[in-house]
Image (cartoon, rainbow, N blue to C red; front, side, top):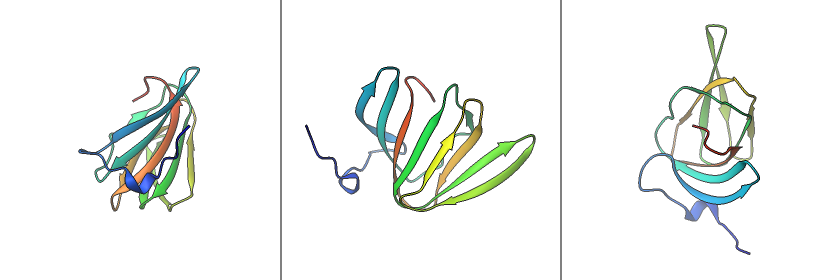
Length: 103
């Protein structure tokens, strides 16, 4: 057993992760970042929980882009095939649960 304090975790580079657990074919990881991620499409569902910071989630659908503002405690859920990109506005910590090996 352990207690993880997200605000104590800081990566050496953007999107560094602390692996928390692997449950069947899913990973639970705490990420730290101060840089945008890449546009990507998940090959499985993703649960993205903003724990600390502020993130814009850019969503691409049918050639259109929209932006959601995420605050601490808010959850973004992407289904298989959803195109998106997380852009932190300040250093942020995010809990991500997704299929093992997802980008």
